[in-house]
Image 1 (cartoon, rainbow, N blue to C red):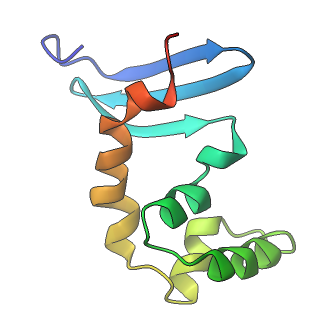
Image 2 (tube, one colour; image 1 turned 135 degrees about the vertical axis):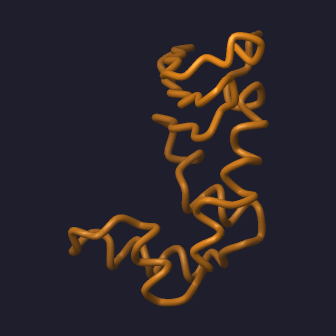
Length: 103
C-alpha cells in the first residue's frame, strides 16, 4: 500500500471484531474498531491524555447529546484540538498490527 500510495478503506474481521483502517497515500490515517475498549475515549485514557473520571462524565453527556465525543471533550477543554488530528491519531495508525492480531 505504501509503495503504491493507495488511498481507501481496509476492513478486517477476526473473531467477531471488525476494524476499519482508512488509508491516504499509503499511510493509515484513522482506525475504527467495533470493540468498545478501542474507542476514542479508551484510547485517550490509555495514552494518558484523558482521565478516567473525565471520560465517564463526557460519556454521560454524550448519551443525551447529538455531539460526538471529541466535540464534547473539546467543549470542556479536556483535550486540545491538535489531539484529534495530531500524534494520537498517527500513533493509532502505526499500531494497526496491534489492533488486529493475526494469531
